[in-house]
Image 1 (cartoon, rainbow, N blue to C red):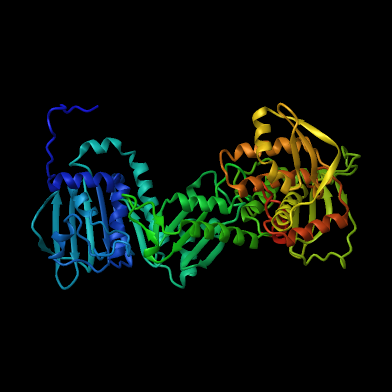
Image 2: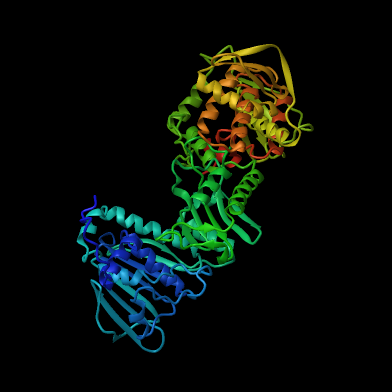
Length: 607
């Protein structure tokens, strides 16, 4: 509501520096973690090789950032507290920005809303300046090591209303720790520490070695050994843009996007273009509701990217966004395809844990369970004794396991997925390898194989169709029928010919020959559901892949199908040749492996 009188002209006034700095602080310093981010970035821009951060009460009472960078002279200190004063850019070229900070707003903004003290030494003598609520004291000499110490006390004391919007001390401390971990990933050659008044929250020494060795060591410390053990190395370059980092296998996924970290020229960003490209790279290897884990670095000429489009510099804008997005998507897909036979180690760990707990434990959704490499549990031993008791009472006359005689000369155990030895419950193939065993879900595995075959045919020459002797009429809700008929031309290119049949009915006249006999009505309904999941997206590739995935599911070997030894081994060999065969179309693992050492631990043969 406009409270000004229409007859009185508002007066334009020049804001004083204190008010201007407090307004700037509202953009730059949202919470203690924002202040820590600005100060640590300043330290890194100063060439620091070690950054130590100390906080109290979640950063509300104290934030102290000490570095061993180039430092400042006594003459530099008052200028550093002036708005729009910076040593990091040439004012004539705002597109050649290679530093973290460049606006020159952080220090005066912090001085406007808290009690700020800066102690620094660049040469022989140290100096100190204090700012309280925007009012600076004169510079005075001070004892100091080379580098800079910035101490911020009583954050927002000058704007107490802001304190009401802060979260709990624990939540603010966690936010600060997240900032330090992200910056530690960006600069693996720099040592970091974060402490509160009585404990160390995070510590990472400077990593040695080349780019990937240092990053591997730092991510082990920050993301955890489990992430790095289940990640693949990413390294690609196109038209002056380089993509590096580590991306986790699809079977190592998370329930939220909390393990996705993207950096542009070492700057941590939360950019929609890049996170969208990351999701697209995992498009058909993750189940719904799961999110990939990755740490990716995009490096390019500073002229190629504008980092000055967001007040907190959290977003960027590329000169050629399609180039960057396409590179991220294609690199991830190619890298994941190259690791097609590898599954997350946590899947095997969950399998072992299920054995060791007598089948009572249930693996969580990310397939990670407590691993105890000891003797079998009491329940497991009791079950084994009962199974070996004389008479085999209760043994079913309809066996759930079928053992096949397999010729070693035809199918050796030296193959990556080994030689098929049995089929259990008419859905799982047991294969023997040189150093253990493989358990394969035949339906999930064949579903992926058919899917990849369909994609290849669709990309190359199109999919051959076969006519139905009698067209199958499928009744659908009118909105679903409209969705299916709206992509009729796309479906025809995939070997599936549909026509309207009045109302919500759809007539299926031809089906893909590759799929053989199938339930056309069920396929059409699934395709309608997939198209609904795509929403209003007009991306042809996404629609086609969704349809092909449904076709593959209906055209694959079903659970309950008995397979001969030759069929089982043929399936294993094709899995070894097919990209992304470690996961089905929905992102679930198609096989798990148990090493011989792990099997022997289950029976107490090894400690």
